Image (cartoon, rainbow, N blue to C red; front, top):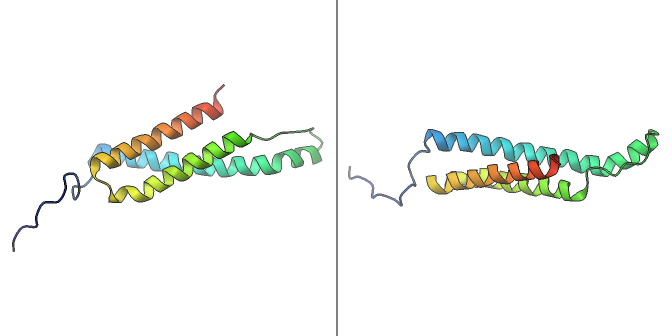
Length: 113
């Protein structure tokens, strides 16, 4: 049987252990950021009326910029996670690094003063 012609570089090779670690980290951060965004959305919509009805005084919620940032980074990260199987190894690693950096920046901006 003749050998198959070589494809583009980086395609067809399995990801190395470093890329697999990046895959896991990016997937966890993307999913966590998306879940956190959904929880912040619920808090933004429910907290003001719920806390006022409970007699704890007025509340504003976490704020729309934080909610939108978490939802955007989480959804974008999940999109990368779904599409990375079609990417070559260097592009896959770069996409994972972008997800990790975006999640870290979002968490740093939203949660630390």
